[in-house]
Image (tube, rainbow, N blue to C red; front, side):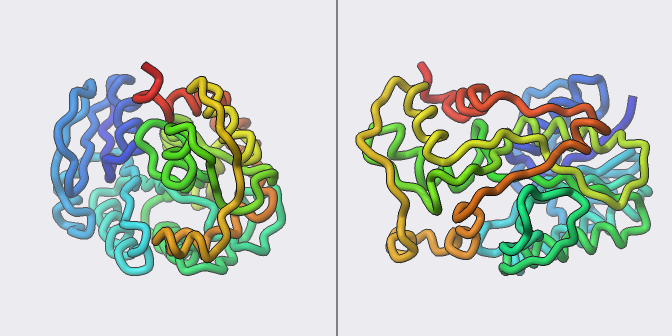
Length: 297
């Protein structure tokens, strides 16, 4: 069995640790506020990924380090760089492969859909630039690196535009507003599928220094809203799209620069992950049910 370190104890990090632990591997799940857990073969260790020496000590003899840590959304341009730099330096110190959790922001708003994983990064936002620099730092490492890129999350405990903006109104059966064109097809990534892709990517035997897209489901936001309401046996009186001024008034300023992702179809080609890694997307119904796990009593 192997030894793995998962940096970041959010929904994806914990699920990645769970999958590895249930396979019989020795796993350390670490973050600044990791807490306790009852996961099989998983130890939790509180640490700060910006401290490369500390992370290297924890990761001694690790086969791979999974970088699943998250910075506060409004602080990506400042807080993410020390995290990725510390993680890369720790991986180099112990000779561990590096598996990075990323997203689609780096392709920029002018990228043609569907997005392919070998598409050049051309960010048009501060957050996209941050993600691009993170991957550039990882791929320059002296150890093999691979990035797994996801679209907007669905799943239990996931913090996403959908869970923040639309889900509260759906849960109360109120008129629901969301961002962008509600009838534009959009890619939705399930946190459990993200973790499965990360684990599968860590075993990829081809050439590293590349990215994989998480196999995702595609549905317009309006369809997702309706399907979520139906699973709750609720009727939504109406759906509409927020204006930029309304988003600002709600204090959700950080969503504005990324709202272009919802203004037109966002399709993701994940055929390489499906073929080379053997990962398939869960059904939209499964994704919604897991998102609503605490609300389906």
